[in-house]
Amino acid sequence: MVLVPMVTGAQVAFWLLAPVMVLAALGMILSRKPVHSALCLATVMISLAVQYAAQDAPFLFAVQIIVYTGAILMLFLFVLMLVGVDAADSLVETIKGQRPLAILAGLAFGALLVVAIGNAVVEPPAGLGGANAENGGNVQGIAALLFNRYVFIFEATSALLITAAVGAMVLAHRERLTKKRTQGDLAADRLRRYAEHGEHPGPLPTPGVFARHNAVDTPALLPDGTVSELSVSATLRARGEILDSQDLVRPVDATMKALAADGDDEDRPPHRSEPLPGEGSR
Image 1 (cartoon, one colour):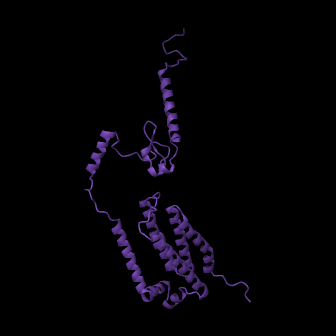
Image 2: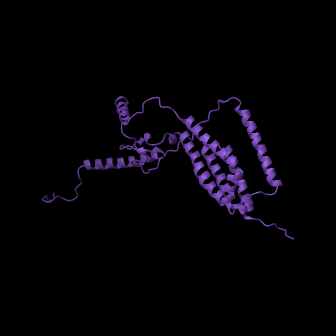
Image 3: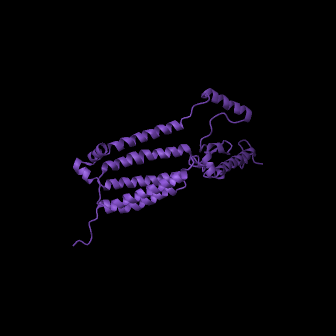
């Protein structure tokens, strides 16, 4: 009589990673910052890849890491960088009735999850073991399922993704209404602003110039020791993450005071404790 059933590695991976995936999925939905939501999504994708590896599906494990976690998630982060992390979402509904439709879609998706999970619990497990054994490997089993049983669904999904990509490019495309400005036009504008407003026509100072650190949150110091506010990002200034300017100027002020004190000492007549050659004692 076996009191303790045999525990496999797939079961251990599932019970260890399933709570992490659920918490990360909830964090992805409930996070206020898009970057935190993307990191939670990365946690879900990596955990799912480990689940594939535990189920003897190395091909799906590699695809999950390389394609989804490594490529698609990076596209999400690039979009966040282009749109802006601090960009506020508009609360004005431009499409009428989208909120009731979203609620119905959420309820339908929840019912689908309940049916799928109930089927997986009640019915015997149906994994890739049979397909792998029948076709001689994981890659061959996936290819047989995709290009035989689910070939029409696979092609329809491919057409849908291509249509979505083309639609996104069409919506993001903007026709140029004015002539593209050349380098000569930009230089003329800089000189015009310099003549009218006194704005420096040259390049802006980079962070950390003449400062004690060269980090991006360290403003540059001008030759007179003052802080150049133009050398740091406006986003860092808005967040208040710039280093204290007084901490940067204080060493420069101490050096300037020391140099001024040395200059005052040089203006004084030299103190002579011994007579010069040719002078007698008086």
